[in-house]
Amino acid sequence: LLPADYCQEFLQITNEVAAEDFQAIHRIVTEDLGRSPDEMFATFERTPFAVTSSGQIHLATSRGGKRLAVKIQNAAIRRKYSIDIRLMRWLAAPLDWAGFFGANSVATYVNEFEHALFSELDLADAARNATVMSELSRDDDAESRFTVRKEYTAKRILTWEFVDGIPVRQILNAIQQDDRQYLARLEGRGYDLRLIARRIYWSTLNQIYRYGLFHSDLSP
Image (tube, rainbow, N blue to C red; front, side):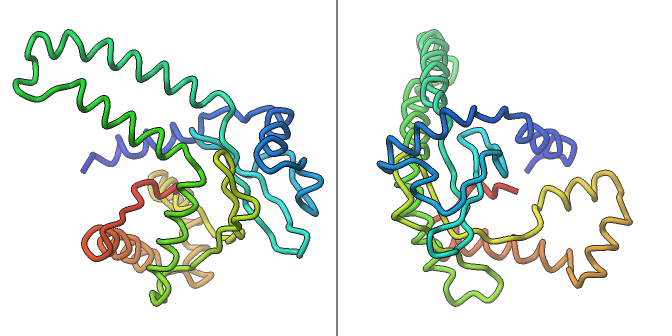
């Protein structure tokens, strides 16, 4: 839908998010799960494995020995998004007054966007959707299913069993930078890059046209 250069720039933006201080992470886990990370998990890495615009992911180990990925929502994210929504409403009012988009109401679009945005920020709701999508892909050999750990999940915390792999972003960056050595190493390890691309398309089309439940954030 967008030129390759635009897509590459958007991918870089996802890497420019600062990590939350661990004291804030400790407080959120304690408030939402009732116990501190050290009490809840056998191990809990204080340095995040990944940072996104809506939170950060810490690797942990359950008391039963399972490797886990624990996504914890940024403490300030709701406040930041609320400010963004207020600014959008402030801009929508004169646009609607001037009839800039004809019969279409910009304020209505902002309201719909706000509803979708804050629904996505509810990680307990995200856990339910993830469980449904995992069940839908049960018979698809091209997809790896993961288990959401509900005992470690709350409104601001989403925990699932860790699945190790290669980020799609690394492959895209290698293609963009013409890093043939990296791509050759992947193929030497048995990865068929064209097959990976086809399976991503296949999964996306299945979600849209077969299941009617589409995961729009690939988190590449």
